[in-house]
Image (tube, rainbow, N blue to C red; front, side):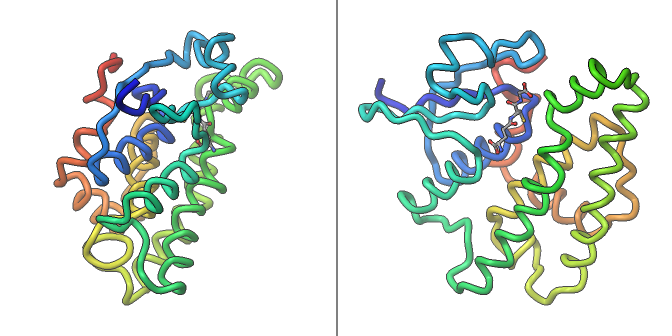
Amino acid sequence: MTRPRLHSYFRSSTSYRLRIALNLKGVETDYIAHHLRTGAQRFESYLKLNPQGLVPSLELPDESVVLIQSLPIIEYLEETIPEPPLLPADPIGRARVRALAQMIACEIHPVNNLRVLNELRQSFGADDDAVADWFRHWVVETFGPLEALLFGSPDTGTFCHGDNPGLADICLVAQVANNQRFQVDMSPYPTIRRIYDACMERHEFQQAAPANQPDAE
Ligand SMILES: N[C@@H](CCC(=O)N[C@@H](CS)C(=O)NCC(=O)O)C(=O)O
């Protein structure tokens, strides 16, 4: 293996986060697709790499190391390839960016993940409308405060923190893409929309988008 192997699924927002970070850091990977809807993430061969059966994972060349969890993998990239930085230089700035990122990664994504939505259907009899309502509920819970924090802060620039894209933008873009699948009304969030649009003007974000992956349907 000469390049890292990226275990991904085109529609996975956590994989989308990592794809953006890899592009921003200029890291080329071999793309290994796992079709989540068919349960490929739970095949034994993949569980040997990532016992959680979740994507993304990043298999490093020559080191027999498999990194899991999108945010720690992105922080690994940040530590090993410092330029361009995805976190600010000052500790308060870093805390702000990590907080914005974790509002999405810790408060929205875990309750809206595919396996949670499947459980709602299978164990609680939720139909498509109920599942979509659930999804939107948890987005709205956090997007209101996220919009307020971004709108009200002098630290917000073209992007979530200043005029260069970073960790918070990565999480924001991937979540907004997910929202589109569940018809989340984005009109209450003009700052989030403006930042999303600014990100999507950049090729690193565009190339990472679900529609541009080898396994896109
Ligand atoms: N906290 C993990 C979450 C990973 C995760 O849940 N990935 C989803 C796709 S976005 C997945 O693999 N889901 C498979 C399933 O729900 O069965 C991360 O940030 O990497």
